[in-house]
Image (cartoon, rainbow, N blue to C red; front, side):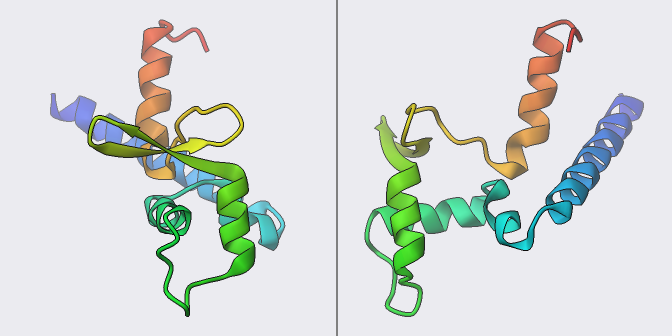
Length: 110
């Protein structure tokens, strides 16, 4: 069991190392918005709720939030969704687990 966890941790490290390398290879102005991290997600949610403080209030950021994202309330939990198709946003920190789950579900076919 420890070998499987070790392999999983190694795979996770390699995945995020490759993802970071790709993100860092992009134009500097696109690096920040290429993936949505937990921290950025929280800031977007605050922006959508119009609760940004005056020092954080950036009109361009707020406009981007309103144009690109929507909040969807399911039960008592809010989810950040794409404004165009309503699908929930995959956070950077969850990418490995989601991709791994899908890979297993399709019987390693992809």
